[in-house]
Image (cartoon, rainbow, N blue to C red; front, side, top):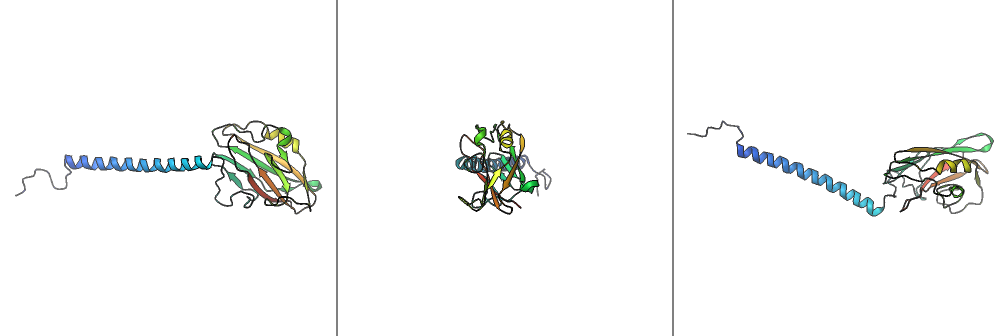
Length: 202
């Protein structure tokens, strides 16, 4: 004869404490695993350098340049987007470079010297040059940036945390249909990769 007064299917005090302990332990384990994954990711970024690009498609290097309209995404939160070029009158073309500062610090997109911030050759914070991104030098065609001073003046002011700025660029190639490379190298006290974009003047 069963003399236990506890009704069948009822949880006793010891069982309830055991279940609560298991639930708490499971929550702690999940939290520790989440924190560990975050810490490992942060450590990896710190070892790589927060100036590394993290792309889903092409890497954005000279050998895997980004296409017009694509965005270079950096591990520290900076993004740079180069729009597709469009033709203007007189054989000129125009596109824009949009900087969005998602980092924790102020940035200087154009560096500290206005005359060296926008060039048709590198290195510079913004380079617009003829040829493919992987080309060291081309001699069959050339281009001229038409609004260098205006572009530089927009690049020079500091870009505050959370701020976004779009900078227009106008250029004129010696002939239509040539490949054009845009190199974006936002100056950094540590290290930041240069983002390469491949456009076509057509």
